[in-house]
View 1 (spheres, rainbow, N blue to C red):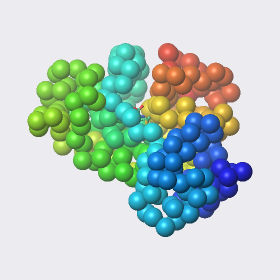
View 2 (view 1 turned 120 degrees about the horizontal axis):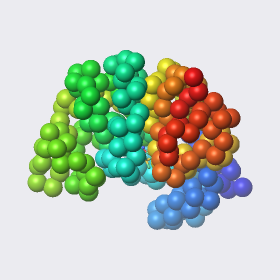
View 3 (view 1 turned 180 degrees about the vertical axis):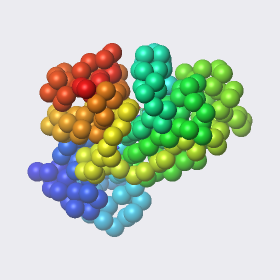
Length: 256
Ligand SMILES: C[S@@+](CC[C@H](N)C(=O)[O-])C[C@H]1O[C@@H](n2cnc3c(N)ncnc32)[C@H](O)[C@@H]1O
């Protein structure tokens, strides 16, 4: 009851609907946060959030799980490069691409690096969105710890990063290919006509009902023949229901 109330209040305050996230997981994350701050219940915690902006930010930070890395599950990115990009680029050069739930930018910048094997960077345009303004801010700055670059091919590392003691700074030309915007997948309208949508490692946090709605929306946002690239635990069990067909492991194609 306490949690249900909390969900309602948070929705009114921030527009974020926690009921669409898996309950046990979210409750655990938030309980450990409020206990750390000395609160005894969700109601108590909410009162704290109302008074203290920093606590609101701590809440937002805890509810969004921001871990990311460049070329995450590198073999899948190879499939994108070798199997899906060539036919997409055969029809047109200016692909419409969306990295949804992009966190700190590793994912859209990976797309830009891969596309740079086919096109000049000046012709590449990627939309990247996330619910969390804080990660978007970091993405725009483009400074990364070494550990998030583990999978970056050496040639890309040399070409597109500058090392500064412990950190790697991404090149401005790569940065210019990506437009970052705040967007809540669970409540904001989707842009349309994408050739490629990459949405990885966020759907796992959502309830089955929320995922169902999102698969329809993603499919609708793709052009016929467009590619939907999901995370490595995020298979769609009945893609046909959404007018998608399996195209490779963790890739789906919108039916033509
Ligand atoms: C684990 S990260 C995944 C980052 C990247 N896609 C990857 O696979 O490495 C999950 C991201 O989803 C974002 N997120 C969580 N709920 C969201 C929502 N409702 N709408 C948009 N983004 C959301 C979080 O802020 C976080 O940055």
